[in-house]
Image (tube, rainbow, N blue to C red; front, side, top):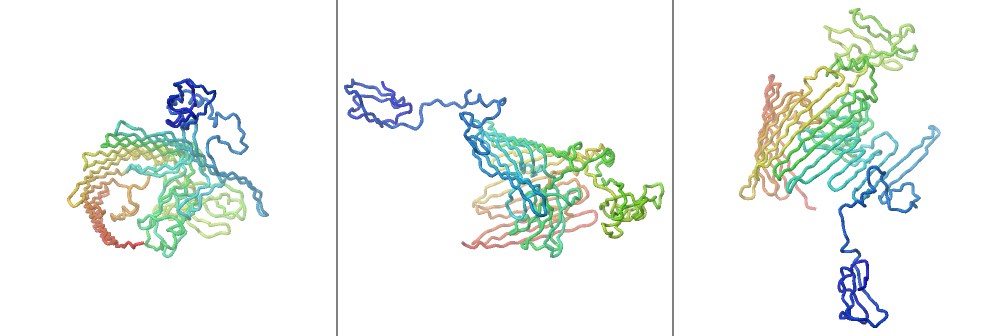
Length: 635
């Protein structure tokens, strides 16, 4: 018996010069040669082929030797089996693939001091240990601005994202984007700095479970601007924050822009361009702006008043391909004891505690004493001219003995302030006090600063989809929200909680001639105090029902029924009947008829809508027909 090789021999590939198979026998699996007869030769020549691997090698999913060096008590060591590190590069990640650039630069000029700049752009991919996949993208240009909003694709300057994957789980660290749209009442898109964890597991043969956990620091706050365009003015239009801020930075890529309910595309060759750093939007000649254009802009902007944290968890369960369950919880809260840009003293905190949820009136009067200078606009205190027992007023003064106060006037709204602009001085506007009429203020300015109160918003949803049979499905959603507009205050807490629910029954029936009949019955109820994270319905939902774009909150009831006939070519006709009832005694009913048909490369679309509304003040109807015909030209 002779051992020929450590690898497995390819069967029928062995050849021994001068000897046929009557002299020997070969065990190809074990690479052994057995002689059947005695040999007289002192040497022989054997030729054979082998497989590039050992077929009978032992393979294990896990063994002690593969994990003993990866305990959490030891630091992660890349290329552990390397006997030496002969690399001379700046970065050495062992078996992990990496590419990018790293730079340092010094800039100076005749009108500026020397500035030291740094740039880093690094991408990583590979394996950590024996089964964890890593991918990372790190970029840092040391500049605190957002990219230009003139193209459809954005290249961000500063971003760190590290991802770990192994089979059915995934961990993301750094700058993460969290987008959720499977829940009707919990629909949002957030740009965060933190961690997210996802895991998917099988539950039996036909079931599955998907878990998502995320904890992060929010980069910004969501808000919505609604305004009409100016005749012939393409922009720029300055956007405003949720607290009427005018100087802020928009988070790149978070905006959604609508004109007359149509979603626009960003880009110089598209519909609009946006300057994220100045919060200004301009429209291209492709979208001519008139006074009748209804413009809506939704975006997130950097709000640095308080440290803001977000926690989100969701779990989706599928059982027997018939039942789907989903539960999700969201918490977004300002850390009231961790202010960032807005530093509050004890008096200001007490002021916020006293106003309750009326945070729109959080104008805190501030008057700082200053040294006299003829170039400054200063004011003197004067007794109240009508009631001496009331607080003093401020009067513009140039007298060195009385001009002691440097004031900052802000716009508090018409008939909410006691000061108006008087004249323009050399160094700014001068304001004067005006007497109220019938206790109604006649001005719109006050020497004050607006205090932003810390907020907390929580939302929990439970949803389900149940296939009653092959043709019928029931879908339900229930939600609970808790919104505290001022966590400094213990007042007005009875209106924090709100509820909402929605259900829909879908049915599909097959008809002769390859037709399909789709029917729907549904009902939605939203409590007046319920607060969704973002816009709940379509951008022009209120206008479609003859209401203001931003109607006052009210308890809403929305019944719905529809029937649709569709063929194999997706030609269809649909009739729907909707109701809309509000607790402020608004009642509306809407009938819609939709039709879509394609023949001979010509597509005809028809949409007819008739809304009848009834309020305590008037009755009306709104009829909107839309017909669109298009022809597809051959290439």
